[in-house]
Amino acid sequence: MLTHKFSQLSAIILLWSLVALAQESPKPAAPPPIKSTAPEQPAAPSPETPVAKPEAAAAAVPAGAPVITIKNMCGGPQVDVGSTSSQECATTISKEQFEQLINAVVPKARRTEMPNNMKQNMARQLGQLLVMVHAAEQRGLEKDPEVQQRLKIQRDSALAQALTVKLQEDATPSDAELDKYYKDNPSAFEEVTLQRLFIPKAVASKDKPVDATTEKAAAEKLHARAAAGEDFDKLQKAAYVGNANPQAAPNTQMGGRRRGGLPPDQETAIFALKQGGVSELYDTPGGYIVYKLIGKRTVPLAETKDEISRKLQQQKFKDAMTALTGSAPITLNEAYFGKEEAMPVMPGMGSMPMNVRRMPDQPPSAATPAPPAASKKPVKPKTQTPPPPPPQ
Image 1 (tube, helix red, strand yellow):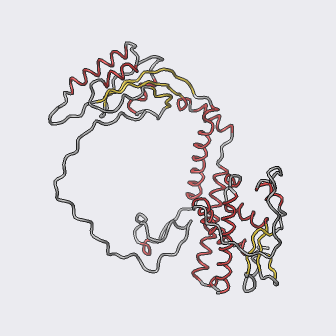
Image 2: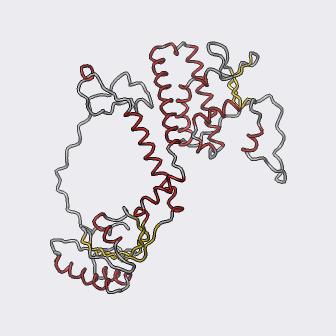
Image 3: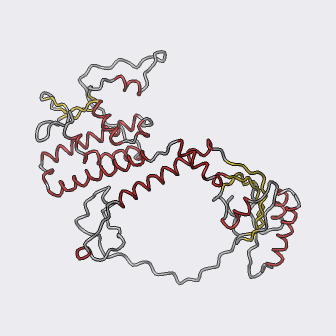
C-alpha cells in the first residue's frame, strides 16, 4: 500500500506541475522496445470483432490490480511505496492508488475529459517522481532541516489551496439567489438592437488641410437624412464616397447591446430612444457616429443564468475571503522589517507561499549590457492614414 508516500502532501504538490506538463507538453516520443519473456500476444482482432474502448477496458481492471510497475526499486528506508516483491525487486501501484492520486490533483470538472495519453504521461512521470523520492530518502535528504521546512510550507500551501477550492464551491449561488438578482437588477438585462452610421474624418496633410467646418456640415446633412428615415446602408456608402480612406464602408448592423456595451457618454441617450428612433450626431476622434434603434427587449433569465451565476459566485467568494483575512489582521515588527513597502519581484521565488521554491545560491549578475545608442539618422515621416471606425 502507498501508506506513506501518498500521504505526503509534498508529492501531491509536485504532481500539480506534472499535470500541467501532461496538458501542455507535446506528445512524447515512443519508448524503445523492451524485450519480454511473456508469450507472444495473439494477432489483433479482425475488423468484424468489436474492440473495447480504452475507458471500458480500464473500468474492467480490478481495483487492486497493479497498473504501474517500477522495477529494481525496493528495500532501504520507507519501502512502503507500494507492494514489493523480493524475488523481482519491484514496486507496484494499483489502479485504486493511481486513481486516488488523480482525484487528489485533477479538478473534478476535468477528470471526465482527461484523454488516455494524458493518464499515461502522468503515470510515467509519477513513476519517475517516486524513483527520485526513493533515492532521496536512501540518501537521508528528508532529514535536511531546509527540506523539512519546505515540506512544512508545502503542506500549508496545499491546505490553503484546498480551502480556496472549498470556498469557491460553497460560493455557488442557489436558484433562488439567481432569480433574486435577476429581478433586483432589471436594467442590467435591457438590450437594444442597433444600426450605426460611421462618417469618417479626413486626415490632414501639408498639401491638403482639412476644413473641419465643411466636414461637420457634411456629417450633419447625413444625420438629417438618417433622421428622416433614409436607409442606413445607403447612407453608409454615401459617407465613404470620395473619401481617401481605402477601407470599405463598415457594416451598419451592430446587433444586440446591453448596458455597459456602449460608450458611457452615449449609452443613456441611446437606451432612451424609441423603436426606429435616431440618436444625435456624436463627434469622436475618428469620425461622426449616428445610431438607430431597431428593437429593444429584456433578456430572459434562461439566457443569462450562467452569467449571473459566475458573477454571484465571484462576489460571494471575494466576500468570504475578505471576511476570512479580515478576521485575523496581520502586523509586522517595523523594527525588524522596516517600513512596509510594495513587494518587489525577487528572482527565483515564483509566487509565495503557494509555490515555494528555493532562491538560487548565486544572485543574478548586476552587470547588464548598456542599451544601444539611439540612432541619429533622420527618420522619414510616415504617411498618415485615417483611423479605422470604432469596433462595433
